[in-house]
Image 1: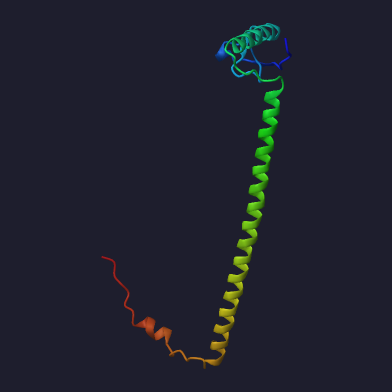
Image 2: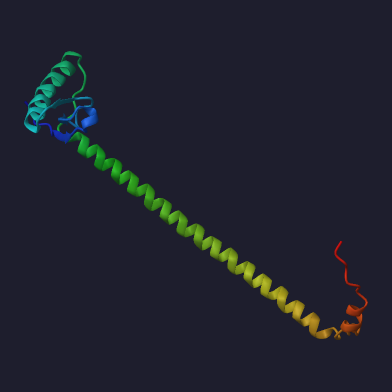
Length: 144
């Protein structure tokens, strides 16, 4: 029999305990056992049965290691997508910084124009207000 990788993992007590064995290269091919060695032997038997069934149905059988190769390919695609997003974010950040810089320059120009206008405008005199006199006209309110 061709050698397919087998993964053995413990099962939680809620799931009945023991161990689960599965062949990552063969979709749905799994078995279990009370011990690791029993799960391994049962999974090896399941692989033989899985292969026989697929052959009888004329279904293409994955090569050993194909799940690992597929996982690696997916990981590469994911990393490429992450790198692409990081590059896009850098570009967006650069564009945003450029917009912020332009807006800051525009605001500085407006502020400089406003300061120039205020320098050319004579100062206004505020009316003299006698605060004490204004306050004395207020009558205290009586509580009811």
